[in-house]
Length: 506
Ligand code: GDP
Ligand code: MN
Image (tube, rainbow, N blue to C red):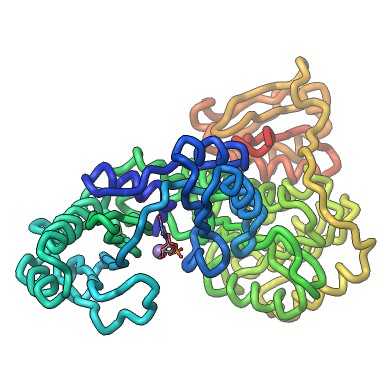
């Protein structure tokens, strides 16, 4: 489920007519100081991070002066939640809370309808409120079950005027959830203030992934569950996935540095859910920390695998590259091998790589990968379906322990010198450019034509396209194969320049 931050959720509540404290987001201490001054000094400082119980971890503070707001902000911006740094805090006017209720909307799968948990019994600070929790059914279009809401309020000790305000707030919360197609919406606390007002003091809302596209105004960049706001690389990967629907691609960052006592940080590249999980277990058991989870499967294009590898290798401090997924992927594995080989060559890989390419055409896939690996400074080993994850994790360990033990520094991809040269042939393709080194074509022609899947021909020493440029545009995988075969043949005269928007700029 796609999550929003507290301040974003509160903006939706406010739009829905609910009372929320005035507040502003700060990304640095000076901003916090200014916001706190504007709010009159006394205020709340709250980390905007996707975690529960922020108060318990020091992520919620009540301050009396703008200077304290500044200092608390500085402290909180140095916090990490899980592996990820806190990037912003909410500076909010402090309200005088008399009593804390809570409202939590969820989807009741059995009833195939939303329902509300409503607690009216909590006094401020009382943690165990299970006793007074009511479940109130909701109708998808007609809203809360008024009779049930009425009974819950009747049974409470709230004074009638406050009851009416709570009822209004509950209905409005349901409307906000419905209008935004929320999967869940929790207001905890729903605060009763000293002067009897009902104010939403916190908000946790998730939007149905499949509904996100209907709500561009919410600014959700990645419509899926993440435990942290998307990182730069995750955003880049998501764009790659959106632009290339051949096979799946999933990338999530897990650790930015090796855990205590770990042997090192590993770039992980899986293929296929279950096999990827087993492989992650194997490499973790071998004593390594996984920097990221990545999955390219379901017949991914070479370009997609290439881009995935480039993104994985944009992470700092890796001691090696570990690729392993489903043992018998029902995809022609050489397409993945070409993509990996291309990325490794362009980045001049100098940390060990161990890749299991089990599945159709695995022998050819391993040969492609290892022959390009032989041109690099790093050991690159390919494995097959009969090599279990545990075995290849052990191989990886040996290579890393036996290598110069350098750590990876992200670098720019190298390109052959004929890229951009006026003498080269240049053809735009989807997401990139095909370059052919015309002056050196003659030597490469035989290999290039043979491995071009009928796309290229040789006209007495001059390259010629056998298909229209439109048709060629979608043949990036075939052209990558041709490039790598020319490289392997010692006559690198074909090169596919592939863009990864956002990656090279960063
Ligand atoms: P959480 O711990 O992540 O759920 O963060 P909350 O935003 O719910 O804040 C935790 C607690 O801080 C609340 O349950 C309140 O007791 C307290 N709190 C939050 N906002 C205010 C406020 O404006 N005034 C006062 N007095 N207490 C607040
Ligand atoms: Mn809360």
